[in-house]
Length: 62
Image (cartoon, rainbow, N blue to C red):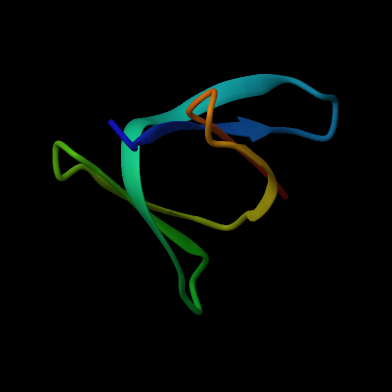
């Protein structure tokens, strides 16, 4: 499988999961559009901090 879990890290370094099994990330004017294999969708105002694709993890931050 090629999907990854997407996490958000706040300014204090606290990490929380935003969406599991994400297979699509599209930058838009509103923020990052995330979609997973279950057709769940979110738009978040964030930027990509780190991608660890072998570990299936994508970290976002403000």
